[in-house]
Length: 117
Image 1 (cartoon, rainbow, N blue to C red):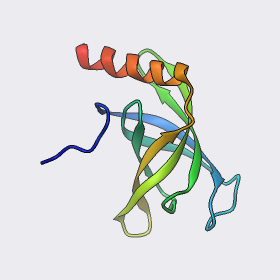
Image 2 (cartoon, rainbow, N blue to C red):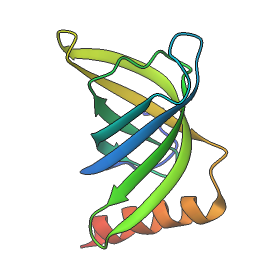
Image 3 (spheres, rainbow, N blue to C red):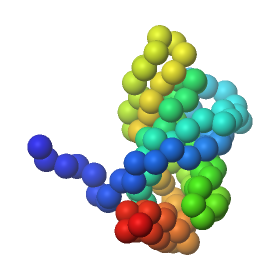
Image 4 (spheres, rainbow, N blue to C red):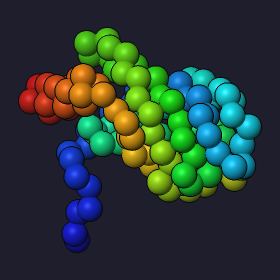
């Protein structure tokens, strides 16, 4: 199967805080807290949430990496979403946008450090 991803993904769960920046279907500044990222890379993340986030919703993401503890702040756009458990749990794919070089380096270092351990 052809892999469309641009960078290697690290499958690990991390706490994530999401703030809706813009969408046509949800009010701005809606805060979604204490959810989980399922995998991360330098270009995006897969998250699990209890709120439906329409495709193209722009989000501010605060991701807490575990080992060593680090806070990553990025902006991402919802590229896909699927329902996991009725209307209670969703999984979404995010693509990072306008992410600083420092954040990309931090994510790249984290993925490299974790996969080499």
